Image (cartoon, rainbow over all chains, first blue to last red):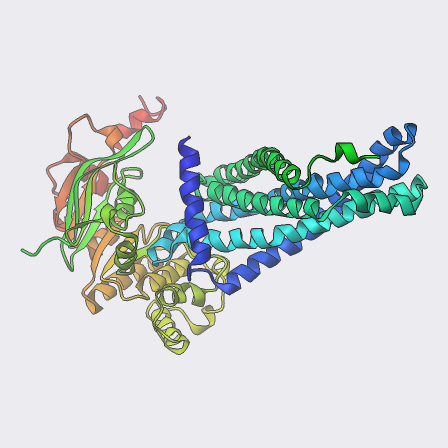
Length: 256
Length: 267
């Protein structure tokens, strides 16, 4: 409980830092490049494979009941709503979150964070705010990449390997996957990105001494982020479904 | 006598279950150079961090110019820290920045100076610590231990501080570099009216730079109620101190500690 309170204060400070003059454009650009560029390939590759796996797994089920052309709708819906954002976030936590925890942990252990404070700079605002903002800005882009590659991967398998008829495949997909699904997925990813960044940075800031301490900070950062992403995904799925149902009442009756 | 610039009043610090400082009183007067000595783990570095508010005392208070540090607002704390130069144990250079940017960091963060002025000031500070112009573009990882300490010193002095805090400035350096750093500490004091606290366990540094010596004793070796400050006086009196623990430290004798070495030395 104590830890959550401390994390909340830390996060509040980092968020305030985004709005203050402490934020340097150069730091932000550097962080954005770091996050976007280094995670791009890994997010694209995992996105493709998840799409392909989904295609293989769903085809068997749907083929037996003769709903081959609906596969696109099901897979694309799960990719855009769930797998894209979650995958991008988990990859970001693994690729960037751990690196941030280790970097800041090393800075803590070598007293660089204390040195910043002594030179009249707020270490949280100076170190965490640009990383936080960069995560918020970059994760939707990574999610879009994961979505695209997921759709591409699944479609290649469905259309080229299983030979599903393309017109109805895309037609069904377009009818079921709406803009709301895409946007709710992106909105979710922003929440994931912000939270995982703040968790990993917080772990780094509270790293213990030595190689073991820094290693532990990185591991804790990832594990806590992962759990938080899964938990938030559940909560946000409930919320978005409620919002969706409020605007577009359950479509059960309309399915032909 | 004038009021103390830095004052610790009944300060105790505890990390979890480990108590590091207990009811410590310490006054540092303006323009004084106080050496804080004692064995590793007796709370010397912690004391320095208390002064700049990097750590909060569990009990008691730390006063800077008569005002409690932990009750300063964020802005006041920043203003206070800008008046204090801190040389960290491992120099704590920002390893993603060049030597030049490290020294310029405080000047740029404080603002108010144009880039040409910053450049001139950084050059001057680096020159004072004896670093050639060629070192400016180097990264901290490319520097030797002695050079790192000197860059750290240049960075700490960049803002012309009123107070200098040195955390083991000469530990791990060769004898010549140790003396260079000692001379730099003396030079800084001579040139500006700076107040200094030097945490060290190098007796040569103590003899050379200190006006006054304060010795802390590790709490784990004291029985309850014994004061943690076991010596407070001039450096010259250390070897004749009445307290055998002070003489033992100053002369570097293991004595009774040998019995802690697992029986090897018994006999």
